[in-house]
Image (cartoon, rainbow, N blue to C red):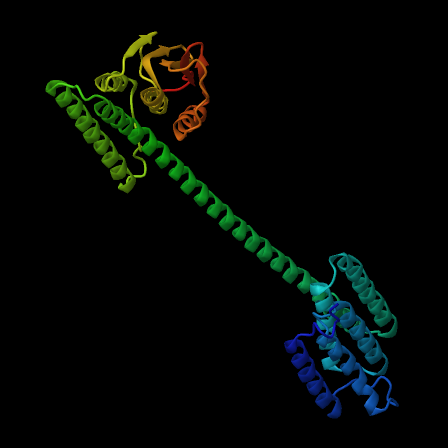
Length: 384
């Protein structure tokens, strides 16, 4: 356990030695008030030694510092004041008020004020000169009260500085957390966009390639159409990938990473038909322009659902219902087996994230002998 001696600051020790040396020189030169003229000269060196010893412990032990200062100053009041002792005693009071316990400030202030009042009354009874009484009261206030006021001001300024430093540190941590969150959100968005864009085209290419490998009896015209379809899917996929990379490198932070409209769904359906998937498409309700995020989310739901149909099913149907308060997207397809486990790939996760960010819901799972994906996206109260 650390002791007051182990916490002594070198600067405090040096200051105490220098102050005592200056006081000793002044006492040796006779610079003191001889209240007790019979007091030996050696005794007059004791009060400065006590208050200067208090300076040594001013930050290591403020209570000990004040106790030594009171003992030294009280002794000096009895035998004769010196300038150094009075000045150093003010530092003893300041040190306790500055570094001591906060709860001791109020009783310390009350005690100092009471001591000044008592000292003033004593001077009034002993001295006939009113000016001398006022001077005595002022000196008492300077020695006993002003160090406490100064310490309180410095302590409050230090507390404010500490609070500002803590607040700045908290702001820095919050900014770092927000930056990390923004990076994570951006990476999630990039992963979702790249998956939704590239997976659709790669799935079509894989399906067409598998079909070519499985059929050895294709005529030249059919083979040419299949190869053309594979090439077209490759070119379109590369074009989409270049577009996304270009947006990621763009300095325009307000530009959307991907913006698709519902009027592009027929083109998506037609592309699926070209790769051999049978798709029925229907629209219900009055078509209208919706917010970009809603239309992009709906397009991505159709795209991901049809991509899964390419990989796992056949004979899909796409239906878009324009409701007064929400947009409903339904994609159903036949499956090879009656029992199908819910897929857990990144596509379904990204689809669900998109819709939930807009306050909607996604349900995907078996529906009788078919597989169904149904997304409901709120549109009420939004502007295009």
